[in-house]
Image 1 (cartoon, rainbow, N blue to C red):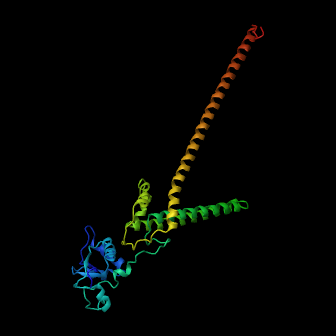
Image 2: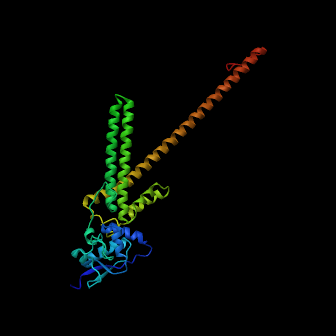
Length: 318
């Protein structure tokens, strides 16, 4: 065995702050095995989880195990007390047999379950996506929603010519279905982004918390994901050119939308201010007219009083 080959060794130690139950569940998911088999590893006896690795491959496997919460290590190849690979080759570890070795490892080798990159799946909460792919998928989802909303509006207007009631019902049902679909896909994409950060998908519910929901989405956009594999699987594939273009368009689209919103808000404010000024001017004119009418009435009353008294009334001509 050459000196540049390495192995991953585990003796049951955990990283600080990691509970034993959590680590066993993470390992069971990572190994695609059951918890009962994983418990056989926590005896304190060194176990070679993977052998004959290059330094880069060994680092990849070690990262996955560290993210699972266990304190494994890389060692140069040398004889060890127990070998996971040898057990699989000989088939000596049969957990269903009475009297089986209490130090039997999981049935699956770690390396078999850690591909270099994970497969991409949009409509699922499993897997991982990075920042740029999160932006690209969100842009595609937004455009799809706008197109679907336009189709629903057109169909509703077409039906409204024949039956307004039917148009309202059709628009309401289709609009609600579109809203539900948007929420479901948004959650799926968001959970995959959280997985890339090594966080639980349940943290997506923080978007419902006031104040927090104004900061948390920004964290999802700016924080980098785990470089290697974590408890949610291998890292996502490298970003394609299409992903980079779509992410750039979305980043450019956001300030444009903000500018449009600000412009519309300012125009609305100016229109409201102009309407208030016009209303004030009209109120002032009405008040002047009413005062003039009042003066005329008072003059008429004085003239009537003078007639009753038999006194002449000076006219403007006199």
